[in-house]
Each structure stands twice: as C-alpha cells, then as structure tokens.
Image 1 (cartoon, rainbow, N blue to C red):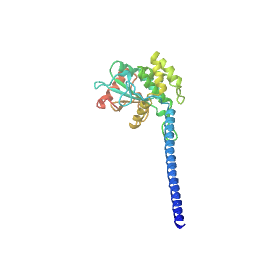
Image 2 (cartoon, helix red, strand yellow):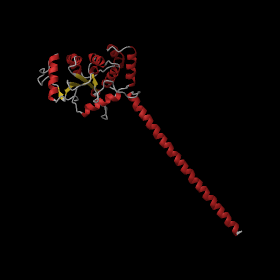
Image 3 (cartoon, helix red, strand yellow):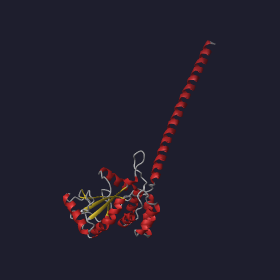
Image 4 (cartoon, rainbow, N blue to C red):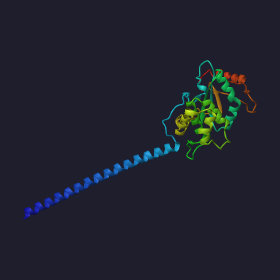
Length: 275
C-alpha cells in the first residue's frame, strides 16, 4: 500500500506541475497578445495622427517644383534665366503685404519692362510670415499669404506666373481681411488669362496644394537669411533703398533710374547672381 501511495503522490505532483506549466505558458501567450495589440494600437494611432495633420494642411498630392523655380526657392519672372552679363534682382514679398502691393504698383511695370528688354532678370520669392503664428510658436500653414503663394506657383506651371502675380496684388484686400478660395482658385486665374485645360490643371494643383513644400522652403530661406521684412529688393546681396529716413525718394519710378540703382548695386556686390 505504501508503494501505491507513493506512486499516487508522484502522479498527483506531476499533474500539478504540468498544470502550472500550462498556466505559465498561457500567461506568456496572453501577455504576448496584449503586447502585439498595444503595438498595433500605437501604429494605428500614428497613422491617424499623420493623416489628421496632412488633412489639416489639405495636402493631397505629391509635392512639385514650379518649372521656373530657382535653387533658392524663387520663381523667375517670364522664365528668364540669370546670367553673368546682367544684374539679377531678387524680390522678397508677401501677398498680404500692403507695402509690397504699393511697391508693385509703382515699380512693378518698370521691372517687367527691364526684364522684357533683357536688361535684368528678376526672381520672386513669396513668403507667408504675415499669416502669423500659433500659440505654440509654429507658423500658421493654411493662411491667405501661403495659399496665394501656392496659387502663384501653380500659375507658373501653366505659364502665367507674372500675370497671376500681378492680378493678386492688384486685388489685394484690406490688411487682415485676406483672400477667399474663390478668388485665388477661380477669379484671379481667369483674370490672369488662365483658361480651358490650363485652368483645370491650375485648379487641380491649387486644390491639392502641390506646391506646399516649395512655399515652406521659401519661407525657410527667408528665416535663415534673416530677412527683416517685405518688400525687400536685393541685387548681388545689396539691398535697394527706395527712400531715406526722411522719406525722400532715392529711386525715381522711371526705367532709367531703376536700372541705374540696380546696376550700381550689382557692381557694388561684385556682380553676384544669387542674393
């Protein structure tokens, strides 16, 4: 009987050990399942957050570069490339800047004439610092200045950058009012002479914010170069001064005097192309 009892005890002990081992194995499987589920949840949340951020910016297309873009994130007026034998003017602007609109009204036709006559080349860099910042200090990425800059880049894709650029400034609203989507997408495009298939293409690029990153890069260059405001006109690193502290005009709104000022700055800066 003693031997049978010992065998029974050993069998019971072995059964208990097997049950404990199965229990441990089940716990390991359960914890592994929980860990995997947690990873899946984190991944899903990350995807949702990324999609939410992207949706907030309205970016729905692969990012593109305007056909007449420069390596410094400007757009060349009339697509004319800079060369060593003539001055290259860089214009920093914000489409909501009243001073930019005033400067364009007075000197815009003059610079365009100088470009048409192949006496200078012009590069426009459109920023959006006037859209302001959020509470956390980050820039507002869906403001009117940025949307106008994106639209201007889209107009370059259909060969109407200068026309669209001029149209936006000509219709600039009171500061702080901003542009409507209908204006930037439809009205200004048609006023700039964009029509037919080109209009459809322009509107698609605008809707998809295809040049969002390009405009962000332009703003980044503005910040990196520590440009203090708009409008800023640079030639070979030299800033053009249109008036002195007493508001006396230093550059007369004539073709000859504008060319004089640009040429003097070009020579003073060592005839450099980029600014």
